[in-house]
Image 1 (cartoon, helix red, strand yellow):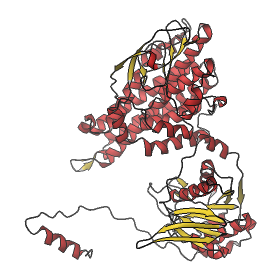
Image 2 (tube, rainbow over the protein chains, first blue to last red; image 1 turned 90 degrees about the vertical axis):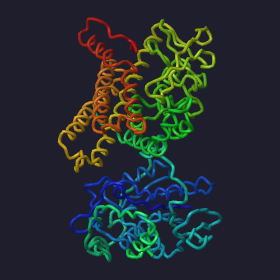
Image 3 (cartoon, rainbow over the protein chains, first blue to last red; image 1 turned 180 degrees about the vertical axis):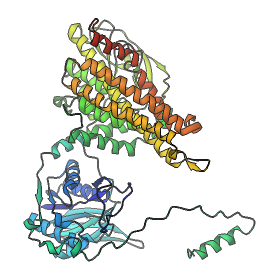
Image 4 (tube, chains in turn green, cyan; image 1 turned 120 degrees about the vertical axis):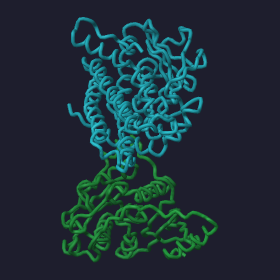
Length: 259
Length: 344
């Protein structure tokens, strides 16, 4: 079978991230890397193969030139090949447009199972897996905490606030996995050296038959209008208990609408 | 010669850095200080990544890589002050690969099943000899012996950096333990000492960066008399001077790794230059980081000491600055052969 893992090249979440003047992500002033949440998706794909399922793993990313770094890291962890969709017209594309590009690239590659992380660490919307399933016309099983593939079915466990669900879907399907699926492995040195020899294909919008009007900032349904830096933390209020501490605390919390 | 890491080397260092960020915390370092041995389960995990087998030949399940990759990885190990004897194990592996490739040790080192340590002529103490499975000893008369540490009399010694578990080693050379002697052994011991000095230089680069990062972070947090101390130019200069030393030392270390990996005639001199430069950078980093931290930097409760003391220990190990300057001078003046092995 064919497994496609969607990965994103994102600005380092631990750095001081910001926006360009047009509201798109500033990729210049901050180093970028493979989204940490996508590492869980890679790990699950590798574990599916290690559990005995015969599959070819393809990594797919949509991103700028440097996004090959994310693919190389993924290939160093394991897997077979990678596809990089890169086109100047893609800059500023929103989740809806991204799902279109991913869907076309996945269809072109062929797939039985598509694995995504639960969200990107930059946009953080978490909607792409669902949009992708809709565009591909296949079942979606999102936010899985545990994944298994057997007999043409993908099964998993989803922990909710009030219940634990056992869910499954027939293949082909799209799933997304959470950061509770288990720590992603570190690439081994052998893996890093082998990754250089694995095929990495680059495609543009033309190759996928996508009109440049359908994507990019001008076609985006959601854009960033304005962004304000979070104000610096101010000194907290210290409540000294002189017999009335509890009441004072409750008054404070009520005033802030916490209770 | 390109003085920059290749893409693979870059990924090796990042991988080890990421792994050690999570698996070699300062709490774990403190635990290593308190324990009898600093070797932990981390050794096996490092082996899985390929770290312990980096310079083990491919025929013995290693990666067969060179001093260039080794120093790239050791820089990350230095940044975390990794307490395991990674450098000593790599030096031992080099000697084992040359003279005892079929003894089975190399496969076990690569797999993380065995820890190797080394004692070269002139070295007073071996690191982790008690925890090691095999000890490679070079004697003063130029013989190389592969010894079971259990057959030696080990006397523990306290290092300023208590995660370095030092022992004086007494052993009786026997025909069964002898693997090499004569000119081949002497040349190999000289090369092993160079690998050790280069590795120490790479570790010192990582330690320098760590102490600088800690001092910069502190200067951005610490408020005195109403202002962040990092806003004072005098403090900034202290930090910038460390960065300059570090950036000047790195190409010197890279050059030495390049020369040693290719056995160039200048290798011994280049290694000595690397040890001098990296030692100076780490020394300044320790001094200035301590200065910037103020009184808290002197306390054992603060983490700075973990890195500072490692830098002090490594500055003196594998030949101190004086020793290496003498080697450079001898090489440049040509009036005396560069000593083959360091005097520790």
